[in-house]
Image 1 (cartoon, one colour):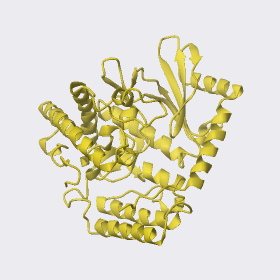
Image 2 (cartoon, helix red, strand yellow; image 1 turned 60 degrees about the vertical axis):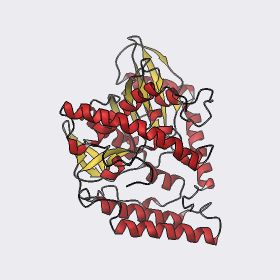
Image 3 (cartoon, helix red, strand yellow; image 1 turned 90 degrees about the vertical axis):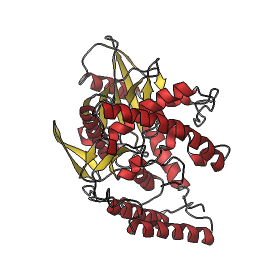
Length: 394
């Protein structure tokens, strides 16, 4: 039964128009000069080149190369794509600093950051970071040969198994390290001082941003800025309410017919019923502690060197303390592509995915054994044990 709603095309066009107008302003000569000077306030050295900007789904970044062989980047959230830019930047800076202090996961070093009001360029909130040298991202490594840049990435089904295990193993180690960062509430981190963080802000998720941007959900329907959750069940209940609100508030492209609307409404009521019955969380994990979870952790945000070693993980903006069950779910990105976009259809995606899932679980267990031997992980903290070996299991 199809219950996932298409996004509002009118809202999508408006979002893209705002982005295009803003990006156009970036290419003005006076703007580029001002950006270069601004970087130099916080990164010492002799600059040799300000590279052309690179645009992602939510950000635009500029790389400045220096004579010492290193580089710095400045990154701005794109208006029209990012609904809560100040909050997004603040969350990302705090979580990167937290991960840097508590794990060996390579994340960018933050040189300086600020809110919209603190940016003299008038380009919104910003973060200036050391650039991580790399050869390519992991999506490029795993992608099917011959695919163009404009094509959606898809795992090369003939990819060497030994290399796949090498890469999956490194990703498994990252997931394991994140799962050991346990926090007492569900929400986003706030840095109190150099060594102290608190869960003091709402969990700003990728889904929340998209519901407002493309689902025309009023911002007032989201949790309050300082609202956190003390139990997984309360968070799942909130998500269930948001699904219902989305169906009520999306202006265009929400339904196809009265029967379609009825199906979607019933599905959301059933989800809400299951959430209120506590079906999505166990009593042993309902009250935490909760794991660090990144909505946007995927191969395209993982940087590797010429030896296929991970040298950086970027784009942490939608990261927060979440229910343990999020970490225990099989990673959706094992095939790079989501099932709804798989060319041969859902059943074909499941067949290929489950074979790759066995590869991932194998290396995950190996990484767990290493971490346990080194005292970094307890046996009861294994992710492989609760993680389903086939889709649909729980």
